[in-house]
Image (cartoon, rainbow, N blue to C red; front, side, top):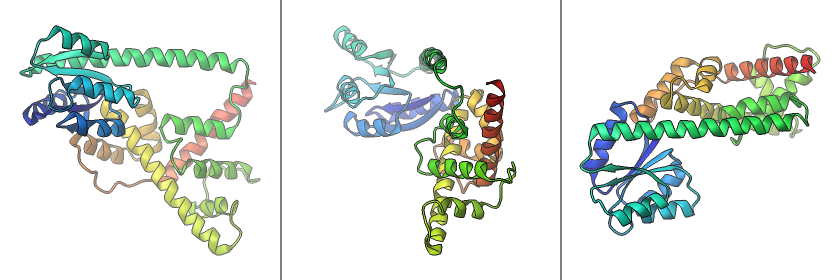
Length: 299
């Protein structure tokens, strides 16, 4: 679970961070000492849960929630308050606040409420997954199960949260090129050869091909790095997450995943991480082909 803390009291923020990390409730993606400074940070980091102080100068907790919702933020709110005011409590619940944590902060209360919040979110996500599965099943009755190799690859990349990354099209173009080769092999040729082959689809001049192939290499490396970070984040939030368990050891060097996870937990910048692009592309190509072939045999 990803948390953001908004409180003008530094001691309260520090105590909440300590409880969340020591109790292994999740990760802290950011904090702010006022409602004004919190809004853009929360929108940018998109946390699962925002712990919001009720009484803050200039912009109080309820007003901050109102502004966040106007910006389209859909996360969960937990209010921090040392004042019991029925009208303010009622208004907070109307704004979508799930729970209240009373000040002074108590470790047992914080742990209990965050656990209940986490369970509620997991339940909501499960229901959304079920609804999505039903919708996909109904849609699939009117279409082919898997359209082509490209769609299968995109579904895998979507699981890793990188479909919108700049190098996704390069990866798909590379898989398409491999599938079109007459000497069809599951072993990838040298990456330099692949980058140049994809570059030739849009460039003719040798110098332009060389320049574009280097750009493709950098775009793919950044995209694979983003996938590694996304999968590591899943592991930090829930080590038993099925997508983490499946993708982390298959597509990446697991020791590097652990390095990224530790950096996320410690809220530090990870040391230089080895990104094994060839392993990622090799596994993606093999798995996409296997799924495509299995699907074709059932049709």
